[in-house]
Image (tube, rainbow, N blue to C red):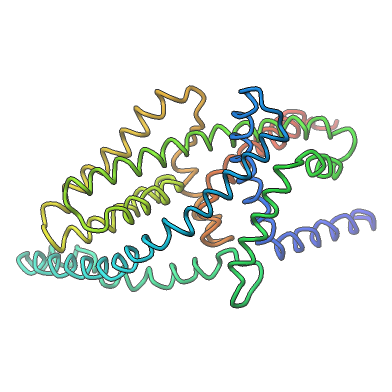
Length: 342
């Protein structure tokens, strides 16, 4: 390897190292881009009614600030009380479940007992994993007000990208060689379309999950209906893992009052997610984004290990982008044109 190649290789290593060191900031920027795309959907909808983009952007920002104020003043205070009760009740329900499983195991033969997993040990093993996941969450600025300042930074980035996205796009495209910039423009447009399709699917899913879980828990007289429905809708942002996690809380609380209600909730929740994925979303969405489940779960594990809790929530859009980059750049632009020199 000659000197020029050594220099190029060293620069690549340095570049990768710098990217790794600022990965949390890059993830924050990506989150801002996702939020800007969400607001841009509203802007395009308003513009379709004849409103100029500038006024549509102002109306979208006012709507966003109004929603934030509504949640801070009205929704969050009431939910905090319910989440505190939820925090106290769920461990009691899990503890009762462990006692029931131990009682069931006691009536079995010793061979069957050894084949059952120890729920206490499983929970103990999960605790450090959850703690590590939370520690890796995106708090760019450390300290007492770190989370608040990170939130304000996220809001500022989102609004700046929404108001005038063109300079940021052009600046990113100019990082590539001139002969490849038109190709990068096409890839960015394809990525934008795919992310907007995913956001539309996700909004429908979140809305349906909230309504259906709220009605289910209300009919079954399960306490803390609003908090649990909100939690289920929030976790609906995470495909597969979120739907599995969302059923733990209502099942644990229902187990405190009635054993059979807990299993009814499990069956209904499975039916809800199946109905949404197989019937409701396909009915309203013709161009929905569909990924292989195994790829999604593997991607969630990888991005959660790299970026923490926010990486887990943003795993699906990150997987979409990764899939597009592999298909368009690695396969089409490199592998499909790879020729062996004679």
